[in-house]
Image 1 (cartoon, rainbow, N blue to C red):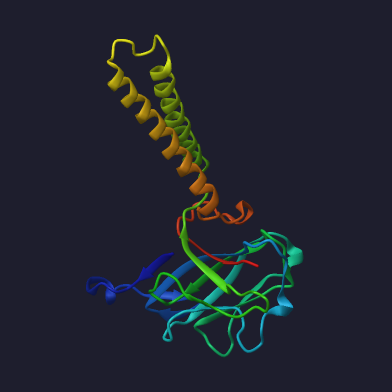
Image 2 (image 1 turned 180 degrees about the vertical axis):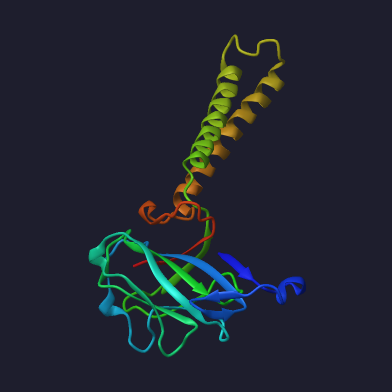
Length: 226
């Protein structure tokens, strides 16, 4: 989210923010990634008419422009537009979304809040639409660092266990100290393994890489699971 605002007293009389010739007090850019995080295909025809799929900002907000920056596939026919009857809402529609399909949307608006509320009902989706909030952008270097430290800790734990159990390893230590070192090695291996499993099973799933945008730090994600 990026904000340009004339709120400082020193700038209030000297700064004018124009959007398409219209004077506004604040311009906020919010980036949303909307995607199907489930295992079944979603169909746009299942979005209820009474409760359409939408993002809702505060009542005094005006959404100025909405753009779909990226889509997984053009055949999804993903559309995001300003609600003609509520200028603080953005409505979504699509033909279908296979697992992993989605879109990246840019919303220019006058709100100060960080994220809009996600609303809407899709038939056969008991969990509803989920807002995962801010998710860090893809960085291959961060992933490589995590893998490196996991490997280092696993190797360290295995080394301590093997050294303690070896007849010649750590022979200069008394038996009690050797068993303490073995225990430390076992603890390191187990805790690292549990951490890896926890991240794999319960870690926050990443949005499809095809929807990532370079140089955008604040990406909010909205996903649907079926």
